[in-house]
Amino acid sequence: MPSSSLRPGYSRRAHLSRFVGYVVAVVGLVLAGLLALLSALDPTGYGALKGVALDATAPVSATGRGGVRSVGDAVAYLRGYVRAGDKNARLERELRWARSREMEARAILYENSRLKALLGLRDRSADAVATTRIVGSSLAAQRSFATIFAGSRDGVRPNQPVRAPEGLIGRVLETGRLAARVMLITDGASAVPVRGLRDASPALAAGRGDGTVELRPLSAGQNPFRVGDVVLTSGTGGVFPPHVPVARVVRATRDLTIARPIADPGTVNYVLVQRAYSPPPLAPVVAAPSTAPTPAPAVAAPLPAPAPPADAAANVVANAAE
Amino acid sequence: MPRLSSTPRGFAVSPLRAAATPVATTLLGSACSLLPFIAEFPLFPDTGLLMALGWRLLRPELWPARAALGLGLANDLIVGLPLGQSAAIWTVLFLLCDLADRRLDWRSYWIEWAVALPLFALAVLGGWLFALAGGSGASLALYLPQLVTAIMLFPLAVRLCAALDRWRLNL
Image (cartoon, rainbow over all chains, first blue to last red; front, side, top):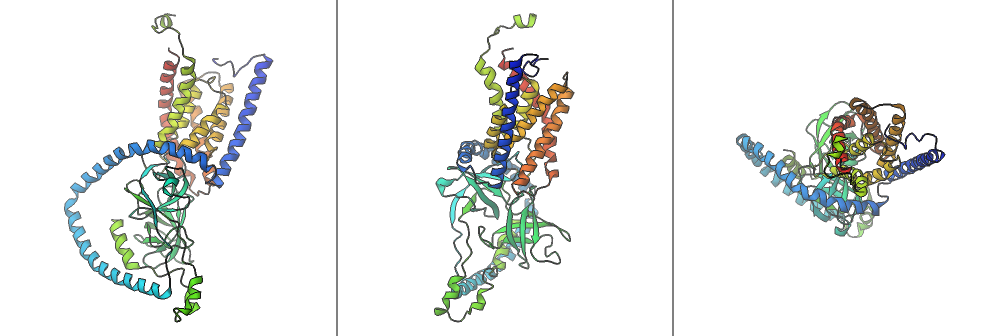
């Protein structure tokens, strides 16, 4: 046998040192297990140490990202070239349809802002904190995380929502100074409050870990979703601002609805980190009657869920979903 | 010993190179997960573990079981796992390797593979359990492709370790 340390023979000292080695290994194992459980339950723990590691590794991913993206772009370009003709015809058809909807949407937007002004209602900021790129993702890990190249230096903080122009990406989990880790909406631990675009039925979009999300309707009864339906964030509970496209239903059965995210983190060019959304408080509305006496406190009840500017959103989504 | 005496470089072995090569290549294996691809789906194998087990099965006397604590902790930091996850899982695997070493009297290509298979399965199961503790509801079947790629790539990792081993020891 090659190894003397594994079969120490009759030496007492060798036996003893081997025994001590195993004790160290087992004690370390137990400690590491406890540490992992703690940091699994509290993902923001040991932030400083993990932040330093994140800063050190993000540039490695960032430098190679450009090359990988241009290969992907080239493939998409070739595919687009082959299908240019019928795509052009379809796009023109869509453009005609979209123009008329846009005018409707503008009218509704105007009406909406007027109504909001009447109620003294103001959405608390969907301000941008940082615009950045996704540089990598957790390739081997059992979770769906991505790394973005903006950190606490740029004002990124845990729990801020991250979106692409097309739709929602996820939320910030932990930050280093230069980079931050984002939990994608497809991660198994992610849950986003959403609302159907067609009938505003509320649901929870829970990640499944395989690149899709499951829509769990909050109302009992028949499944309100059909294949092709788009869901938007509802803004309920804060963090995620309302009216951001989240996913499109690809499979709907009696009790299971699977949807695919509209923004694909592998192909989006830039992502926007926003300030965590806090829903408009009810108190100012109740205190408002001195300025606007008509809306009685009874009106305050439906306020947390204002009607979505459905047509405006439909326009955005129709473009993004293609 | 015709082969040894014909080696032009002789027996000079740098102790630093001999000790650092396995650790450095295992860390490089962990760093493979920094490749700039965006995956929503775990298909990519745990390359750090591939290298660590490759070295461990090739050279049983190289590392004591407690070395897995340090290597695993480094893997956690590089990959971005909950701190301590791979440290715990890898130590269990190394202890099981010690156990296997005491049971098995001889080694072959197929036996090493047969030892590695349950170890990788255990690693995937452990990762799933820790993800479950972290609130992830993903199903275990999702990680089957990752396990298959790891098993398939294992002989390659062992070959790589063997080549590095010869370079490390100046053979």
